[in-house]
Length: 184
Ligand code: HEM
Image (cartoon, rainbow, N blue to C red; front, side):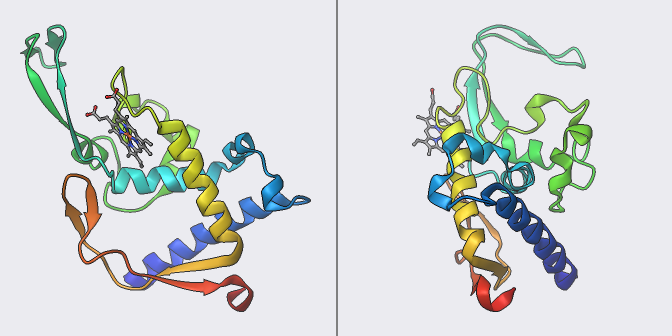
């Protein structure tokens, strides 16, 4: 089972690598503009899928500034403090067909149709959302782009999630890294 997961992960990595190669075609990495990094759609879907499965911020709290009527008629009165479980939302089977499986294609536009924009919110939304959301996404694209150019990454050991103030990994994340010249 793990082997097939690793094979799929490898295919995703290969596709990301090709996308990066395409972006860089006639350029040096240092010539790539910050905005051009948004032209990595599959890599972006992979980042989003990682944030869906493992949202660093799992729960946030909000104070209702008005009465909120839920779809089944229950009302959360103004002034009540609610805890919103981002992790649970990201793993809810009514929204995500195969919630525990890593599947970046769920973020393709045609597969996102009809899904509430609130079903995926690692940075949350509304007036208290993460002020560094765009920066963080671009930074992750950039780090992955530069990493994929020279390294192939494989999982070394299985890691379990460790929920703390933010989500971490029990015993840390162990990766196996190969220079690309020897693995390609
Ligand atoms: C993957 C990385 C990150 C994730 C998943 C994340 C997620 C979040 C979430 C869910 C909130 C809302 C918290 C709440 O309402 O209680 C938040 C708020 C915030 N984040 Fe991030 N964040 C990330 C990176 C960063 C970085 C790199 C910075 C700054 C350099 C940052 C700065 C902030 C600030 C200042 C707020 C508070 C905004 C406010 O209350 O008005 N975040 N973040």
